[in-house]
Image (cartoon, rainbow, N blue to C red; front, side, top):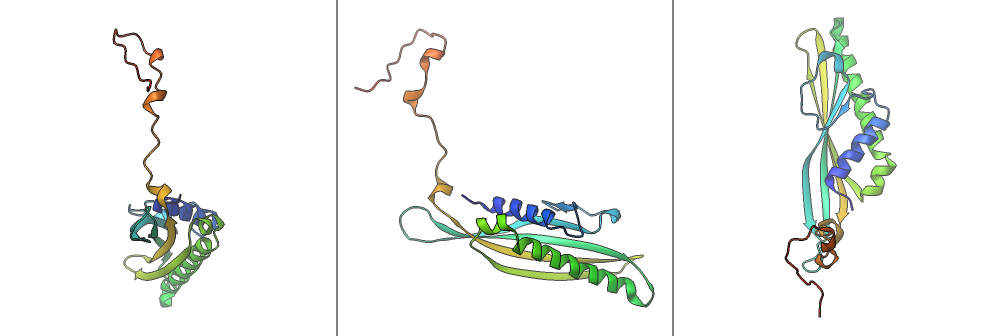
Length: 179
């Protein structure tokens, strides 16, 4: 049984184990501001889940697509002849590639999904102040199957297995045996 949260957790583990320039600076749910001394950094969260029913009747079976957003951020000091911006861009492209390789080559992740449906990246640059900041937002859509076991009610002990003898006597006797 796989859930979208399982996909996010496994994707996070793949990026941490993948040996990116961000090292251990890989966070989920990465929704907090970044400090100057934290670059490079990767922040991730689950941003969407879409389920499509596989049959009109019968047990619940869904083809689910979970979209994980991965945000990578790098910085480089300002230099003459725009070399700082060039360096920040190069660092960003390198981090993007490391993230993609870590995700695509993750064996634990590939055993949980049917396919990677899409990978879409957007880049952004900022050169205000004495530092060039560069960021990439990559949305990766993972397709996986959810069957009836994913939607089964939790197990509950049967009432006839309840041990009344273990409780202190109350003066009330109830016979739960069936005729």
